[in-house]
Length: 211
Image 1 (cartoon, rainbow, N blue to C red):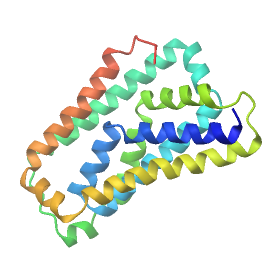
Image 2 (cartoon, rainbow, N blue to C red):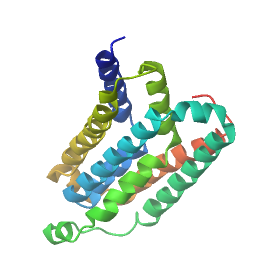
Image 3 (cartoon, one colour):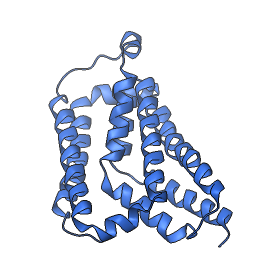
């Protein structure tokens, strides 16, 4: 397979992976609705930077490393699961707190914090790391041309950040925000339960080294 075709196939596979529901989607949507559009966009940028990180280590042979060092993969799954459960607990504890959204609140948001939440959420999921590694191992030529190393990271950033930017823009519009404010406690608890379930699944399946 020519390198250019392999790169396009990798990017298509990663786009499908980004579009599948998961903790990243939940966090971006919640920040966009519950905080501000700026916070949602900052979270999306954090997801994009996480994709760049994973693409870099995938290019360096992450898949082979995790397949060889079983305890490292198990440790990543447990650590990622613990972080997701911690994040879910924070969302759950704040579910009952009223949130009066207005222009002043949007101006006083914390995009920097939202960026780091997006980045840490992306990096905490070892399934994402293994997905990247397996896609690269399956599709990238054994000796890719030099341009691949420079073209892939920005292209992957565009895919990850671009998709979650669309999510943030959709969920930060007026009607979704009104629905969120009306049903905040239930929505936050459902979101927290979804994130916690993903984290618990990672921990319970930590001993399974298959992808």
